[in-house]
Each structure stands twice: as structure tokens, then as C-alpha cells.
Image 1 (cartoon, rainbow, N blue to C red):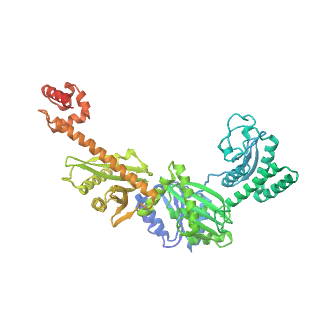
Image 2: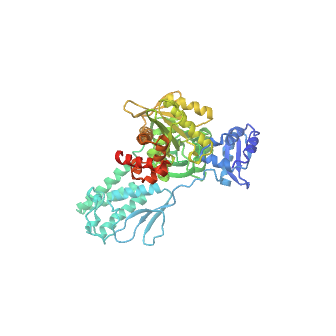
Length: 607
């Protein structure tokens, strides 16, 4: 897979210490990745060293690189501009090529005497009327929701007039979210008038709708149509309330784009939330796929996002640092013709905005990978808290359980993407440690586990991203000796419990890290620690029972420890031995008929 690695290392070591752009190519000469660098030599050589430590995306990229070219530039900004133009020209496989979840959106007015207003990505139904197209499905859906609420339109699946009076009105009617067309009390003409007002609201906005409705209300009052005037008054009030809710997102007249990224299960997604004049006007989600380094992805994402003529605001907020905040601002300012500030807020309302965008990215990615946003967030927080190079997708946890000298075992559990991964659970019998020595037992278990990994044992072939020991700094220090000796580079920490046996901290080489302030992370670590304890102690109890059975069997003349163990391995349980025939006992333990008959009688009377 990495047949050209030595050649690539040697070539990259000869690169100049200047800014520039590099082009990675596969065997066919096709460009598969384009990047820019402040210092070409430093950046390109990083791909070909410590390959195993790369994230999934970079590892796959490096495995496909056959050769590379480079272009030296005068400045880092020149490199950024050149990178953008080359990516647009070649569309390399491993660069971010944005595909959002949106096509054109339409307001759809269904056919019939009692039409409904819905959202649609298509406009091919001849019986329906469409308004659009619009670029933002978020805005269309939000506007439809408001129109249905303001004008109390039905959103159920009933068809009118076919379903008049067939069922009781639903909850929406009782909470005044629907006018109750299903009761059959709204005429076709009255409903058509309301739909007309709703469509006018969608086409022209709240201000013009209020002016028209106010005129109609005044006319109805002059004509002594007080009931109609009252209904129009209520609709005007509802539109005004909706307008207030729209502007409640920000107290300032802020206009900005807010970007956030989310990583989970080796995958990446991004969210963009747009504010204009203090109002949230749009939200976009992008599924990027392979996991990228966080600081790299933000630079690439912004460059791709604004390359197709999108409006560039004066303020861009990021949920974390990119490689080139200052350069990005300079580049986007040149494209837009006005000054652009790219910042990572640390406090205040701008931080609230980036937190909201991050939540949207987490929720979207969680939906794509089948995880909850709580699980996604917990793994991200764990990476940040422990200073890990990447999100710990695969976590192993170990616990020692003993009951005297004869019953000492260990349990190993695996969590994958924040959930138990039962295929990765393993059990160990302690073989070499003498006496009650938890540190020695933990050393033995981890040594055996990684010896089998290094020997290529398929049942231990997955290398964990993080190891959590049930214990404190002493356990971590003990296993660290083994890792140093074997050359194992896997993040290693302990889980410390309080006096109520609840996880209170993470033990590291240099002390303890408190976790109870972070609910999602606290919940995940507590779950892991409880699960590894349950798994190991259940095995210890089972092992203890087997040991007791073994001791009972040795009471029969001619049955020693080895023969008792052979019987237990063959029949597995007391009942299994009890149900066995004399001939089966003879075969399993390699004993005479006389001994087997004595054994058979013993188990029938004792078990």
C-alpha cells in the first residue's frame, strides 16, 4: 500500500522552505489532492512520517499518493489564491467538494376545494400551484410553518370535503392552531379567502400583509361584519407576534455567517447559519464525509463555500481556529471588495451564535451516522479534555476482579462511536502474577493484549484510539511501563471513582482531571466504568463457581484437578455433568468405568 513511501519521504525532504502549493498524484498521474503551505518542506514531509497516526482521510490519501508536484509562491496569500483556483480547475478527489442537502425549494399549494400549503423540492404535479423556486429550504419551511400557524390552516392528512365530520377534531384545533375544517363548518368560499391571505403573506411578507388585512378589517367593521373583523384582527396580531419572534434571535443589528464543524465515526459535517440585520435568515448543512483535521477543514470549507459568488458578509464567525484566519479575511476581502473579519469568539453573544451553529452540525452528523448529538458531543469533549490528536472512535476499558488467589480475572470492553461494541469484548485469566497485585495484573493483561496485536492476532487486530483503566494514577503508571517497554503509543488514562462508586475524575500521568461538570462526558465515562466493572465481575463470579465445582469433583477417588477441569470443559455446568451418562463421563475424563460410576453417583446425590 505504501510502496513509494521511502521515495516520497526523500523527495519531500528536498523541498524548499518557502510558501507554495503542492499537488498529490496517483499512479495514473491524476491529481487527487491540492494543498497550500506556509513552508512547503514542513507541510509535505508531515504526510509521509508517522503515517499510522493520521486520521482516516489523510491515511487513505497517503496510501494513494504515487508522486507529487509543487509550485513555489512569493507569499502565503498567493499560495492561498493559487490553491483555490487549482482546486476549482481540477476538483481533486480528496479535497472538500461541497454538496449540501438542498435543491430548489417551492411553496406548494395543493389542488381541490380545500388546498393546503406545503414544502416541495419538485414542481411537477399538474394539480398543484407552486411559488418559487427558492434557494433556501430552511426559509421556505419556516415561512410555511408560520403561515399555517397564523392563518390556522390544517396540516393533517385528511382530505376535504371527503373527511368532513368523520373524526373528532385533532389537538391543533383545541389549542387554536387549526380552524377545524374537518368539522365541516368552514365554507369553500371562506377557506379560499383565507388561503389567498396566506399566499399573499408568503409572497409579499408581513408588512404588506398587515396593510391589506388592516384595510379589510376596517372595511368589515364599517359594514358591521364584526365577526369577520375580529378574525382579521386576530390574524394581524398573529403576524405581528411572528415578526417579533423572528427578530428575537439577536439584540444587535448583526450580519454575519457562522460556521461550525462536527466529527464523529471518522466522518465530518458542517453547518452554516446566516444572520442579516439581527435575524436568522438561513441554515445550511453539508455532509463532507471523511474526517479532516479541524483547522484544515475550516480553511478549505470557507474557500469552497464562497467560490461560487455567494454574498460575503463583513463578519465571519468560526467555532474554532483555522490554519489561516487572517489570510482568509484578507483573501475574502479582496474577492468581496470590502473588509472581512474572520474570528473565533471566546465570549459574549458571538460565542452563543457559534455554539448554536455547532449544535446544528452535531445534530446533522448524528442523524447521518445514526448517533445522538449527546454521543457526538461527549466524544468531542473527551478529545478536547484529554488533548487527543483525534476523536476516540474506538475506546477500550479494563478492570481487574479477584476473589482470593484462585479467582483472578480481567475484563476488556470496547466502545465504538460512543456505544458498546460487544464484538470487541474480551476476558482474561490472570496467569503469571502471584498474590493480590492489581498493578501486576493490569500489566499482565495489557502486555498480553498488545503482544497479540503485534503478532497479528486477528481477534486483537483493532488498535484503540484510547485506553481507560479502572483505577487511578498507580494503575496508569504501571501500564505505562509496559507501553514504554513495548513501544506502544496509545493514549492511556484511568477512571477514578468517589466514595459512592461514581466516576469523579480521569487519572493522568500528571494528576487528575475532573469531569463531573460536563454532563455528557460524565455520563459516557460513568457508563464505560460501570460496564467494564459489570463485565469483569460477572466473569469472576462465573469463574469462581467453576472453581468450586472443580473442588467438589476432586472429592471423588480418582478425580484430580486436571480430570475435574476436563469434565467442566466438556459439560460446562453442574447440570451438564449430572445429565451425562457413565460412558460420557468415562470418555470426557479418561477414567475407568468404576471411577465413572462412583462419580455419577456422587453428582446425582450432591449436585
